[in-house]
Length: 429
Image 1 (cartoon, rainbow, N blue to C red):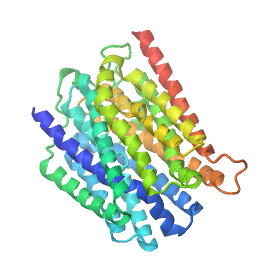
Image 2 (cartoon, one colour):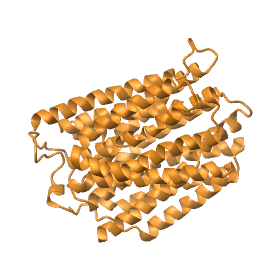
Image 3 (cartoon, one colour):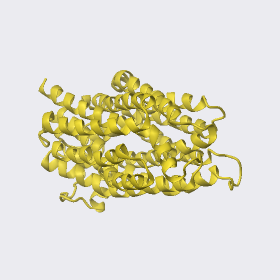
Image 4 (cartoon, rainbow, N blue to C red):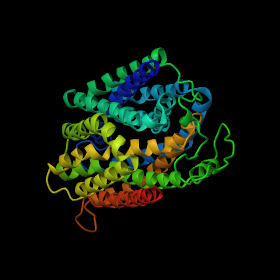
């Protein structure tokens, strides 16, 4: 019961964190265009600056997230969770005060620093906290529940964005971020990282009780893990190696989609803040229902490998349909496929957690997050110029969703690797 109470406080913090962050998401495209290119629907400067920001955040988070995860294994999850929660406050406060060009650039810079500490650290530390509290056999369900709580925050944040004006959105978001930080500091107990919750969760990193993989001898990690340390971790197990490859291609495709989608919809269908909010609401509602109801049921019966395949197949279909969207209702149908795509991340995290001991959850999750962040660096560099080119009048041919189509091929590669991993697992059993 104590563990359930501790997780409840974590769920509250997670809900408030994603609620406050996602409130501003539907409005940020209009705010960016208004600050940089007033009165225009298409603005290459806005596309390039957005891509540059994502690339810098990804590069910084790639270094910071494994470090934060490793430090949380030594000094506790709560102390490190305070970093992403508090760093997210400043840029929202600035935009709550003013969204003029000068203040936009100030918030832009602060958002880069905040994103470096928020992009992967919040998810990584929350997952490690759950792993500290829950035995291995139940982790997939709890990881899905954690993801569902975060998605529920997105739902309510999107609803708020749908009905609040732009100025009020940033003001309410800033207040909620402060409340999140206070709740975390006042009520969330530390997880006593390093104390195993069950015998099977205390295995050495990458050991296996049910297959033929032998437990490798790993170097003792320093406080600041090097790239060679992380490479040694990820290549020490065939399962972790495949999961790392899947994570890279999945995050590359997802980041490519995010880099292009909002601007594509703005140019192709003249979507406004309200339409973006409706789209995000469709996605997050479908995801919440799936993660809180379907995933706990299916995880026990199908296993993470099959759920991962189903999720990646659905994501491939979603991206390819986005790229050829011929009517305004098509993006809403694509968004509803989130009922299946939300299986991907919890399945990946559960497979990683199974390979990590109780004192190594933060580092293991941080390394996988770092792989995703590396893809997040590459995606804006690759897809932002492509998006700007095909949305401009100088496009070589009329295919505004071409950059989204290219992101779909990356997702297809992740799906192909997941098939080989499941095939090997089936043969081994």
